[in-house]
Length: 198
Ligand code: ITT
Image (cartoon, rainbow, N blue to C red; front, side):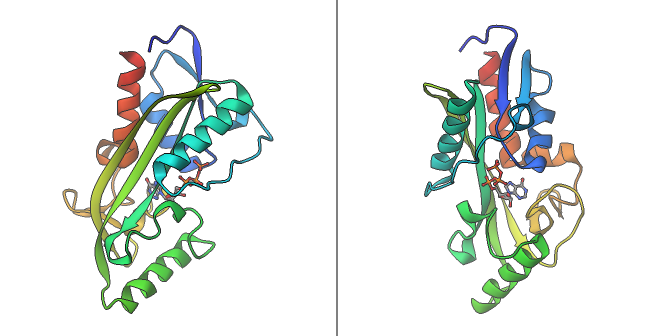
């Protein structure tokens, strides 16, 4: 795809943690990045998909349709193997209002299965759309371990309980650049950057 300049790209997410990470990767593209703050009062699409990819498409198409913008959305989450992939696509709305509550729930669920840790991964499915349909999509994955108790104050969401073996720390205990270099979102959005500039 050739991006005629100056084209706009809507970063369609309501999650401030995601937005910060995405801006750091796409910030130097010859595109005007706009956000949902530039399109106030849009209804949030219901995430009814059964997979990350379905939800990413559904969100990107809904926001592109409502705004007329070239739009990127992503759906992401944590899959814990010992919990059969939970919380998965339900990561944002998983049990508990706060992350400490969600972590406690995960601890209880693991305990019920006779363990206190598990292999796990973060997945990020990304969809680029125009109002008339899907333009391009990709997925990024990072493998690690679910580790309680929580450690670190960086990142967002489940980062304090996601231990990344090669760093020997959780993704909340590394710098933003270190997280972006290996993360599911870093992989997916670097591919998008290459696609948009190729
Ligand atoms: P939008 O749909 O508006 O983008 P959201 O937060 O509702 O925002 P998702 O439905 O994709 O987005 O849910 C993603 C959830 O997965 C997120 O809220 C976190 O709980 C978790 N998650 C995703 N990426 C993460 C990361 O890099 N670090 C920690 N937790 C992450």
